[in-house]
Length: 144
Image 1 (cartoon, rainbow, N blue to C red):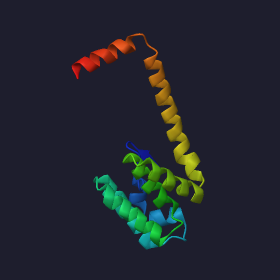
Image 2 (cartoon, rainbow, N blue to C red; image 1 turned 45 degrees about the vertical axis):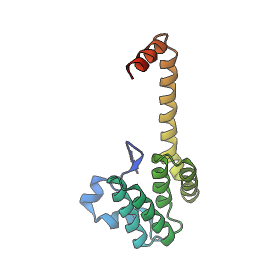
Image 3 (cartoon, one colour; image 1 turned 90 degrees about the horizontal axis):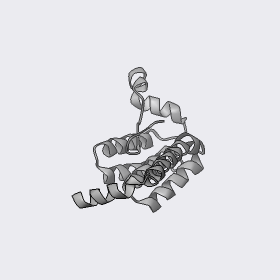
């Protein structure tokens, strides 16, 4: 599982595209307890997300969850999309369910995200501590 810029989920890797069918690659990773129809809805949601149709993407993820209520990846993707849209309450709820269903998501996805956010915050703290920072902000405000 990989996250690309903008919190999007890359549905499959290039090797999976080349070596196997798209659905079979996804189904093999998830096990046999998921409905193929639910998987199709998740793939559809991912496609909608990639073209900027976030409302349709969320509806597709919700349909996948309705069909397979323990589909952790559907909750995860829906939560990440809610997060991207700034809907933090919905994002937290969906991400909570995703981690509840698959605790490995915390280690695989959220631990690296939180580490990157901590490093980014440390960089901003360092920048803010520089004496020139206030002057630079004032100059930017004048330009705007």
